[in-house]
Structure formats: C-alpha cells, structure tokens
Image 1: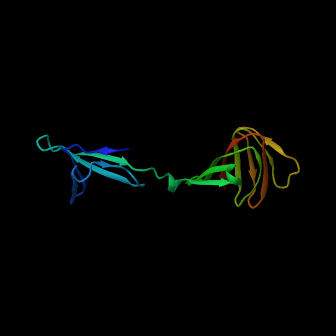
Image 2: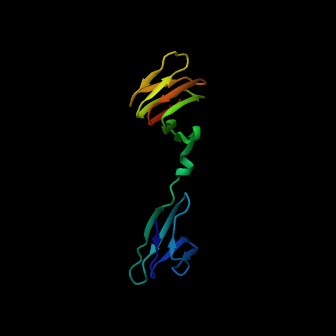
Image 3: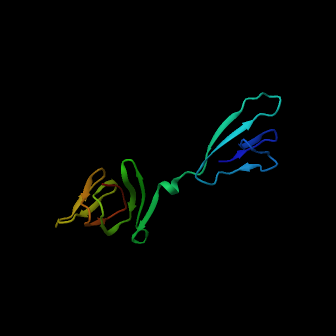
Length: 155
C-alpha cells in the first residue's frame, strides 16, 4: 500500500511534528504497526481534518510460525490463539514418523492418510474430514500415496 501526499497536503505525525511533501513524497508501510495519519486540507478549504488509518505490513511473521520437516516434504503453519495451538499443513507422498508432546487431533483436509497409531498393529486409512487422535508423548507413522493436507489441534 502506498500513501501519496499532494503538494497541498501536510502529514502530521504528532502535535509537534508535521511533514510536507518536500520532506518525502511516499510513505511505504514497512513494519507491523498501525500508523494514524491526519491529513489537513489546504488553507481556505475549511478546517475539517481527515483521519486515516493505514494498516501497515501484516503481523503474519509474529502470528504464524512456519515449520518444515523431512527435507521439505512436510510443511505447516502454526498459530496460537485463545482456542489453543493449531497447525495446517501439507505432506508429499511418502512415509513419515512423528512424535507428540501433547494430545494431537489430526484431521485430513484433502487426500488421504494411512496411519499406524501407538499401540495398534493395523494401519487405518483416513479420508477428508476424518480425524484421528494421538496421545501425548507417543510416536505415530503415516503413509501417503499422494500429497495430502491436514489440520492439527494440540490439547
């Protein structure tokens, strides 16, 4: 997003600091803050102040953690909010083994996953919208014949 000042506008950053177009021509949002701008009309056009709120660079880097496993064959994005920790991700075709530190609720979003859960001897295939639960501090195995997407909630 770009904000441009015309020759007849000024930009007030605070009560004591005002910038004119000669100070800079373009403001390019570059960090994860919100900037309050007050734009004053040229003299003679009234005293109404227009207020604008420019949402600067999204806080994605602070909000979402990107994970990559197995040489890039498994990728996920994690976030934590009032509902707890969650990830969404994708897996390439292949075989993978994961360990847990909390209870994990894995839901297949697209494709299918064949899973060997802890304590089980038979593999079970999960289709889209099916969920399997892995206890905390356990290991489980996955086989994928094609790429798949998933959601995981940590409890």
